[in-house]
Amino acid sequence: MGTIEFEDGAVAVDASVIAEGLGIDPSIVHDCLREGKITARHERGVAEDEGRHRLSFFAGHRRFQIVVDNAGNVVQRSTAKVFNCPAFVPARKPDE
Image (cartoon, rainbow, N blue to C red):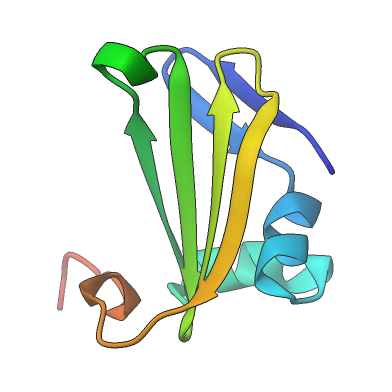
């Protein structure tokens, strides 16, 4: 699995990680993110989950989630088909 890094409050995930989880070609990941075909969510753990981060990626009816520690080590990963989830609505551009 590729790398996941944290720097200055931002998370960087290698495109190959996202591609593998969503079952797509790594070469299209950046374009899909830019076009809103892939959306992402980052959640920081609290209480007993302090020091962990859940990264979720959505494309079509697929959700890929990875839980990582502060060093970027993968603790857990899952892929699922989901339906009728608001996360599948592409983000609108500010001028729309």
